[in-house]
Image (cartoon, rainbow, N blue to C red; front, side, top):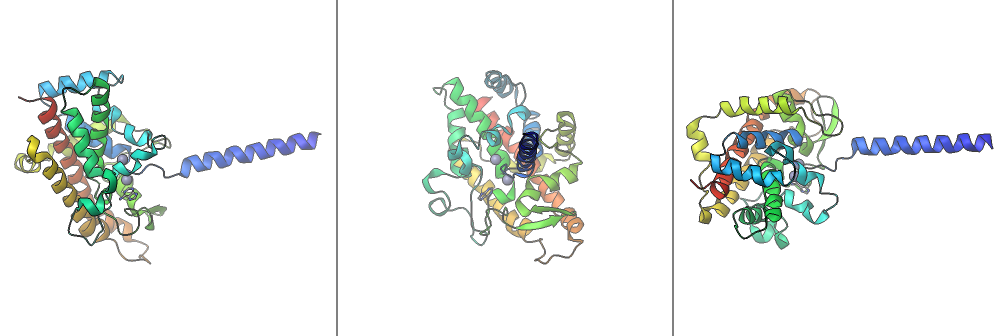
Length: 297
Ligand code: ADE
Ligand code: ZN
Ligand code: ZN
């Protein structure tokens, strides 16, 4: 009797431990990690005009939020419960292709490009319900971040690098994951907790530092194409820019396996400026589109 109870205890303890381990090591999240999304959101928020800021505030209030960084990773959090949205976070453009081809890369409208355009339209539609527009805002903020992660716009028969396993600074990981999180966290000295908790103050400070380094002429060039008839083409151009970076930088600078043991620091040093510029572009472009639809001046 005593032994049976002890045995049950032991089984339960093992089950709990396995559950915890699965929770810790599951890689369900596939997007810029929470830090990348929060940085894009924080850069964008600093560039909203007065009208857009007030409209964003009203839409967020419905969700009990006050700032864009609070909702920037919501679309990842609901992914498991809404599996039909999983493919909205990326567009698998073959690495060797010239660029985005809707019929090849976006079957049944299940890809990042079409979903960005669709959510932007809902946000721009005065007849849409406030609930629909709040949801569209949350998706749009998140997906604009994903669009600027090069491996969300490319695929080398490895699910955008998810199946390309590697060891980065001594940790087992994969190419996709280091671009979602490790490269920018190391570059900006940000630390994410075991349940994806982030230090919002540290993230806001990092976003500010990054944003202040943007040259006005570059920002102007990055944010072309916000007029209604230009928006789809702009989103496609930004997708193709990400795809080119995936080829030239994310995969292009990766040494072939078996990789030398000390490859990480060189790769980190070479990729950091590209990862940073993608966060800057994502933030400025998100603001430009939100100003165009929510803050006509
Ligand atoms: N799953 C399949 N392809 C992917 C990609 N490019 N990015 C993230 N998740 C994916
Ligand atoms: Zn995502
Ligand atoms: Zn990802």
